[in-house]
Length: 244
Length: 57
Image (tube, each protein chain N blue to C red):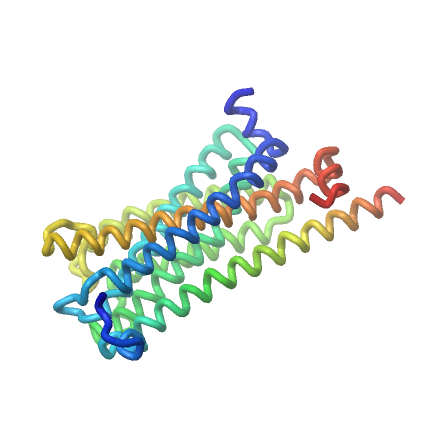
């Protein structure tokens, strides 16, 4: 048995089923720990008072919105280059969660912007490029849903994902390239060290929790896609028979 | 510990509306995703099983 064994949907289906509970439990435990730090250990900010606590979800969600997109683009590229079935399935399985985190980043940003900037929304480079990311996710999901031919749909959606990937560095560097209302990168060690350390710790723990959550839901979704696409095979028939 | 009482905790220094508005919607998004996913997974299984039974007949 080697690593390539798991490139086969049948083997991956079984492996994914075993991994899901671990990722789900890990995500749950880290979320509780991260939120405990966010609300009970992290001190009040001297400028923003308690409103800054939104950062603990805003930043991990914004990171995830970009990471997931890049991972999707990676799977799309692998699929287009090597025509591997499982890569396209992975790309499809990640998109809804990516869209969800993008929405959360925008939403929490608005609810943080209102008390701090006095506006729910401004057409600033960071916010606008993140909104474009949400439209990209929605567009890709819609494209996949619209094309009945699975292979053509896979290729078209992944091509759109790859073209849209240009937006990710634009989001990331927008605060440097343009004069924006949005603050620069939050992860810096220039603030008061004790404060920055505990804040950073909470944020990183919640970011890892978000990663584990994403992996868990993407694996559940990919298992569904595998069943759907392999329904004519003997192993899927056997699984459905067992009801396992 | 930052909070003298629970009411102070919920007030969030006067920013409770914004803090809980952010966290509330995030929790709702995650719950909705998980619920939809569970439903879709069992729906797919049921549908495939039905299709399989038809084919056997």
